[in-house]
Amino acid sequence: MNTTRHLAWYAFQFDIPLDWEITGHAIDEREGRLEFSTRDGFQAAVHWEPCKAYSPESAMQAFLQKHVPAARDTPVTRLLVTRDAGAFRLGIPAGAGQPCQAVHHLAASRKLLRWVFADASPEAVERHWRPLLASFEGNQGPVRRFAAFGLDVRVPSEYDLEDLTVYPANVMMAFESKRKARLRLHRWGLPELVLGGRTLSAFYAGFLGAQKAQPAEPRTTTFRGCPAVTVAYEQRPEHQMDAMMGRHWKNGVAWLWHDQAEQRLYACEQIGPEGVEPLPLDAMFGAAPTEARA
Image (cartoon, rainbow, N blue to C red; front, side, top):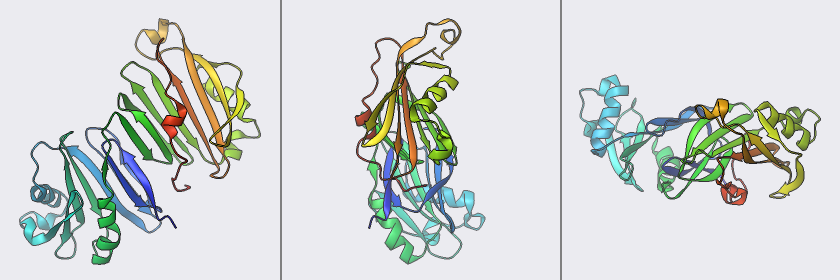
């Protein structure tokens, strides 16, 4: 039985417990965090921040001085027992009251990657945290993977994450390339309520129209064995004067599919300047999704 799911974000990838949900986030690529909780409360958080000069002990000390007042005048060697855990240096509290943390320096991007774990017990460290840290992989090649919030996609590194909207049963990720091509991804829960009795074609044509697009007639098809529709569309550019006076981009392509086993609707819209080709859908979404049902 699978007990983990994949997490991928900016420069890192991990296998995390299946029951973890992201309950807090700050997604700036330069500095941010993802927080994870279960029904039992906060479990862990992964942070990233700029770091040019790296010392594991100094990084741990700085964190403790900031977040644990009692640790401000105590050397880290008296507060933590440190050991290697894969690419990370793991700091296990020598006494009660301090968090368990692990740090790693991403040399290529000059960032400090830090995990903070709520449970510092020896059992949790050996059973959960060391395997999680050992699963670390980089995510900085020509194609980057984003696996979080129920979406799992592979996007060329020239595409930057521009916007993220996370509501219950409604997630949207928006990317933009160096050539101004736009990519928007959606994931909806409660498909019966979202569709409201409409067909996939009727719902998606109305949705695209609400986004100020001009869709053509949707075509019924399948994607990854799921009922789907695809539709070409036009839309005005969004940048500066083009948004008011520019000609419509005419190369938009959109897909919507209903994963009936997962009970989720997924959608993908791509459009850009003339000459920019859309990304292949199969390459973006890869193998069948393994995210836990939220």
